Image (cartoon, rainbow, N blue to C red; front, top):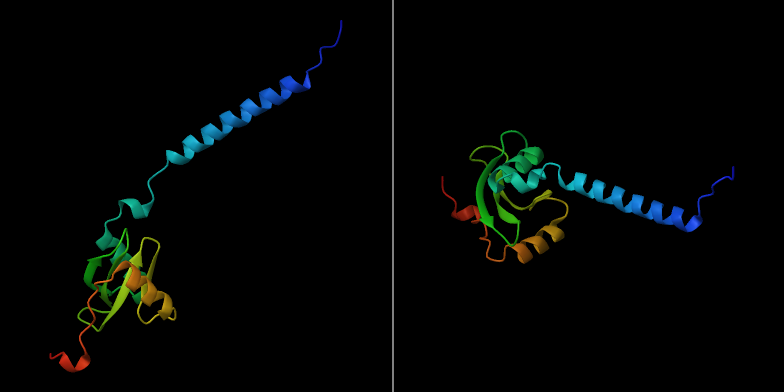
Length: 127
């Protein structure tokens, strides 16, 4: 009996089809997973979560204003009725005005929240 040999061009075609099928299956599996937490989490909860991660469990959101896209700006305090600092919140990161990246913070604020109100001066605040 003659030994049957696999031709190279047929082997390349079969391997190419196998790679395409495997890639399709992997793409389908990747898109069938859960939606990212950022996509289903309301903005107010996202900002509070980010604030508590950075400032502690007593952090309080005092103001949220919509920015461009999924960016929001506002004021947050480390404790209830405490001194507020401004923030820029993106889905994956929150920058505070007193962070070391102050240049990046000011650029994000100017780009994404151009009408964001300035905090009142300490002299004009009366308790």
